[in-house]
Image 1 (cartoon, one colour):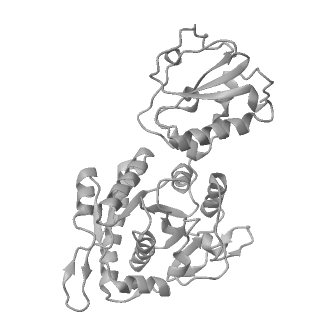
Image 2 (cartoon, rainbow, N blue to C red):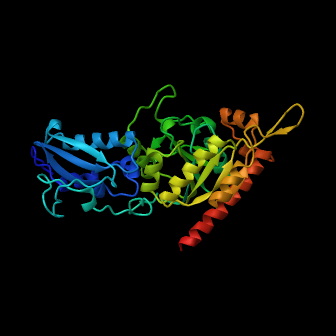
Image 3 (cartoon, rainbow, N blue to C red):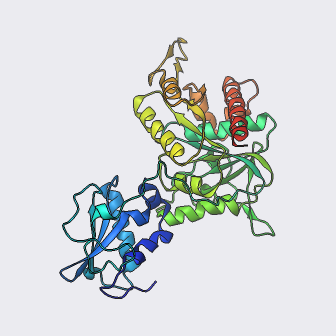
Length: 387
């Protein structure tokens, strides 16, 4: 694409769509990029790129403007064009509109003459690539940190293994990988003759984590494209072998890692982890909304830290409230998979790398066995619906 000074065409800017990051694609919402970039006009010798801003916050606008300038900077001076964000319903300028296929450099273009084509939901790009040998992929997610998502991921994976399934776990939290610690696994992965990474094993699980490649005291400061590339290497450049389930422990929130996941590989469904308090529930709702918007089914909700039993007197208390997961389950019509109590043994076992699901007859092992059974049942039901 060649863009000469003061001759930026509308088509050229619209064609930047192929270079968009998944972060920008997600933030575009119900409009395609080509509908957002709706006109270019000449304002006293300076070109003005007009962009619909509906649904975009300041951070999104800044990211989009930076992207456009970076894409055009080699062919034109930044001083020769500006980017103007406006809402779609803004009244049209009183200047004639160009024909659809005209060069828009010398004409003002009305927002009403460039009809956006809204779609009901953001669809992930077609052509998702499966992970060789993996039958089902379960994403474990939460809207916020500190709810015990990694604890649930590890114990769910071991719970499935205890039932005879071949299971792997992928720690997709680039910034705060904790699975190696929780499994007491600190060896460096090897590479086989096919140049694929061999995942280390612990407690019957095949394990992959960014924690294997970065020292614990190192702060990872990565932008979106680097996160995407690292995760995609974990998907396709790891020799997972034959697995019945791959559990993916996602970082908290609804950001780059989550979008890379849903757009790159076919996911069987998502397990949402929350705690009873309202703040966690509100964030869990955001996670459900994100997965539904990207056509990922919700397998169910796990409520962690649901009750606390005093070790001295035996009194059971709802420290963080009660009934939160039930409310989410009822409101969004998603299955309730189970409740995990707040007990110090779970934390201690995780710190020691010896999860309680590895202990025979432990009550936590029994809880996760019940959750694992529901996950299998719901995953199979979702597969049958697709057939």
